Every structure is written in C-alpha cells, then in structure tokens.
Image 1 (spheres, rainbow, N blue to C red):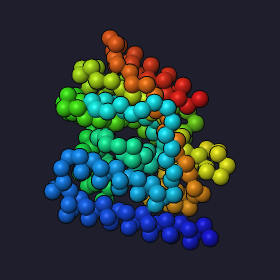
Image 2 (tube, rainbow, N blue to C red):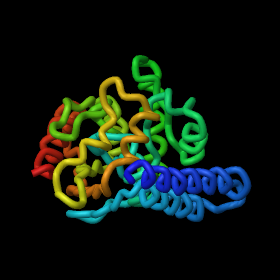
Image 3 (cartoon, rainbow, N blue to C red):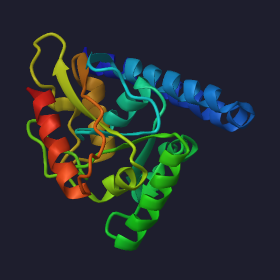
Length: 244
C-alpha cells in the first residue's frame, strides 16, 4: 500500500512540475513582477501538497523586503517551504543550476548561484545580494552551508551576512522542523544528508507518512554595529531559541 500511495504522490508531483514548467515557458515572460511572485508561491504550495507536506507557521510576522531571511537546512524541501511563505530569492550552490528542470526553474525564480569553494565568487554574490537588498528584495540563505539531520545546528558561515551589514538591512531567523503528523516525532524521512542521492531522498519523502513542517519565525534583527561574525553567532543563538 505504501508503494501505491507513493506512486499516487509521484503522479501529483510530476503534474505540478509540468504545470510549473509550462508556466515558465509560455506565460512567465508576460507576467508582471507581482504575478510572477504569486505564481512561484502558488507552485511551491502545490508541490508541498503533492508531497504530502503540511505547512504551519508560528511566531512573528514575516518582514517584507528589504530583508535577509536565514533558516536551518534539513532538506531540499526547505526551498519549497520558504517559497510557499512568500516571495524570496535564494542563494544556492552552483550545482543546483545544473539540476534537470529544477535548475532552470530556480534560475527563473531569481536564485543567485554561488561557487562555494571560491572566495572570489563569494565576493561577487555578496555584491549581487547587496544590490538586491538595496532594490528592496527578500533574500534567503542557509547559513549552515549544508544540510543537517535536524537535531542540531551546525556552525554558521558569516560571509553572506556582509550584504546585510553593508546595506543595513534586517535579518530574520527562521527555524524549520519536520514531524510525523500521526506521532509528532521528528520526521527523519525528509532529511537529505550524507551520501544520499537526490532521487533516493525524493523517493523516501514520497513513501513517508504525512509530514508537518513547522516554520518558527523570529524577530528581525538590525546589525546594530555588529560585524558579520558576531551577528552570525547571535543569529545562531536566536535560531536555537526558536528550536526550543
């Protein structure tokens, strides 16, 4: 039965992917900015529903742009969750740009791609982020730099916070928690860590019982004279408080 249920979910996911691809290819260029943002949000909501993921919000209201949102990183589902909250532009590793279908869709959504091992490329992306914040955009990053098992927070990388320091834009911490809807226990099925392949992770998600992702939203923080390293430590502490 679980395999049959997974195939039904897969059919819904493929239908949602096809709809998103169709929109990007034939309608996106003719949309205004607000329409594009609404289309991306609606598509992300549809994808979460197709995967059997229920989204719940707790805490503060989301700050509108210019703002940098920072969140813990557990799964590729995190990107769908944050898009489903409303418009944001992600900073993502360059490899995502080359993923079939998803890479094209990420680029169309305004994602900024970074070569994580290149300090020169990090500087380029910080400049792009700073300009985006000056333009009033909402940006989103995962300061851990990689996914975790969801039980702890990895150390934060501070480099990308420099854009918020330079522009004096606020940073808003978010904490994502995935739980099994029936038991309330942590849903390890959605974790994307270690040597897992993307295809394997997607299949585990498709075969899992229904999952609830709770997004806890913290207070936006201005820099208040902090450098990026101190700010990163304070944001990590704020996120740990949201996890309690």
